[in-house]
Length: 311
Image (cartoon, rainbow, N blue to C red; front, side, top):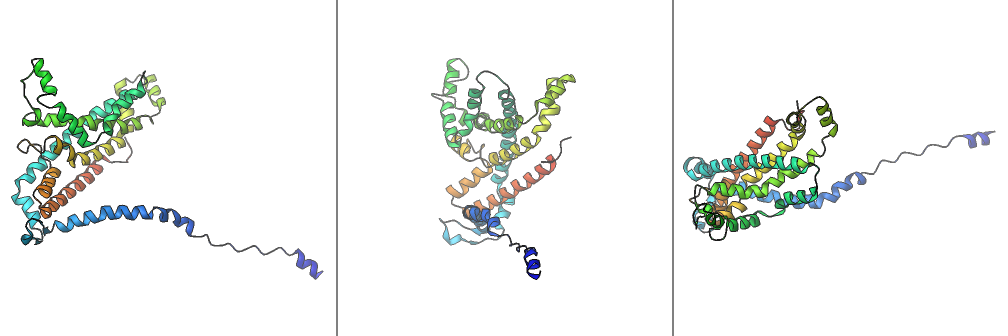
């Protein structure tokens, strides 16, 4: 009987082994090399800029190099009129460019979102300028604005304007000319992002609105725009930062001229560091530009209520 009871006794359940921590850490271990490389390529330049902003550093004048404290920043805000001029032009450039790019990009997205013959080809033509680099874009428009072989030559042939007119060398026309050149490349960015969000809008909403007698404008105002709110906020913020830091197009197209009227703050920083070799002062200007962008971005996201519920 004792032997039978011993045999009938249920076996002791095995102990649960602790789950290995390796599978949970494996994703982090896999991305660690790339993360460390990105951290190195990003963190080191940023720290260097903050460090050199407190230094007098000019390789061509080594006897003046040394710790400057906040002298560079004091000079920026009290003794450098070019800083304020370039900052004002940068704000003007960003406001005009982003506003026009958003308006035309939204219109293009609404057009290519419709069903029509050749829609795929139309989308490819609309989005293709975004694949062109800034330097190549400016090179194309330099040729188009050339006084001998460009647009002005053909306009003069039709009796509009004079021969030899250069829009890029005239202070009254250089800003509109630069705006048009950058619009050609920047509009597709908004069109791509807005179109991607437009395709997620349920058609049932528009059908219900049509049944209720809502016009196309009311459908756009009360259905399309609220749905696109976050996409518009994010795209305008990204594009504003990129346009503020725009150097390649303006440098190649106008060089900041004529008479410095198209010099943005980043272009002024590039000229100060590359041409004048004043890396300490250029680093201080970069730090100020970083703080300005950070503050404006935070205020914009706060006021626009990004990610919040649309009323």
